[in-house]
Length: 90
Image (cartoon, rainbow, N blue to C red; front, side, top):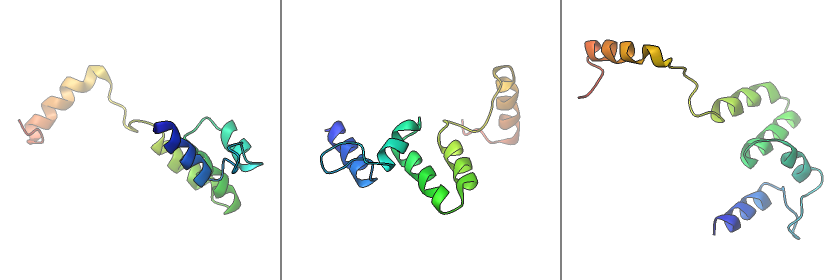
């Protein structure tokens, strides 16, 4: 079922032809990008709308789990400060 949904998404994005092959040039361009298909399509379209830099920023932010860095040696200090401020709900 997941494979079918993935193929449907690729077809809807224009990456696949009716025969299930990579479309030319869209599908081939998307396949070269090491990204989720939606992000690859967004980047390709952004270049045609002259907003590639902005889309690169958005895709970079969405492609990572968290944009915030929490050093392990400081985590206890953060929890202490949050408890002191009443931010922890325990």
